[in-house]
Length: 346
Image (tube, rainbow, N blue to C red; front, side, top):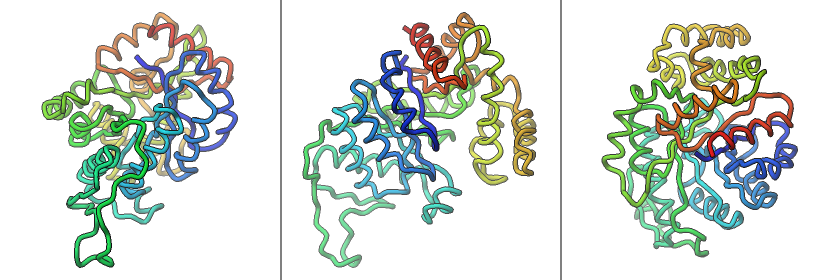
């Protein structure tokens, strides 16, 4: 298993990057930089590329609707170049609140758009003269649109790699099937290893049946909270607020992908109660209402022996990359937990 870690959306970025060399020494393999509606991920990834030597870098994620497909391809090639081939392009559909509310773009056909963006990126990286006649993207613009002066072009620079790894964030069955079919990796949220097969097994099998063998095995990237040691259980409650945020605040009532996932896991009533509390402004009560079993099952928190047992369960469920979120408020103990985890997966 690879060991990764996400950076925060906001606050303390340069301070965290200053510690990344220590995390490299502790065994961290990859760092994921998110992009919601805070600072962009690209500038921060470039900064990290200049400050590290071995660490792999990934966008976690770039929403497909916020850039043209060719700009996404150019950006990925540029980041791969400045990092000496250490970049992975994480993509996802995001949601209507962000895409329509912050970017002013319609949230339409996310699966079809994702497929086309991936196709266009790979054509750009192969330095083909780009001609794409899709339903959502047409490059160059066809006759009758624009000035009529557009011509097929290819990327000026030769990319360091013509196949930059792509990881798709996906939760719904059709999205997950798409990831298993066309991407090097798949990034779900709140991965419950005992129930993942029931929820996603059929979709993964469907996509894998159409998968190009040249893509290799699917990299399954999950994001459990982490704390290891005698006092770790006391930190488990620190994983609750993020679950409450996603179940309650990431999406509108009746349109929340994470709440839908909790229902599919079997926590429908409990998740609905969390959402009600969160949307009424009672965030602490919402966090307290998150089911204990869900918090514990989706985390790596406990003694070293317990975490080792849980690692075996995650591995058996197909997980290949752990994008861990250290819970301990002390920076030194967070670093130590990553080092302990590296020893357990070695």
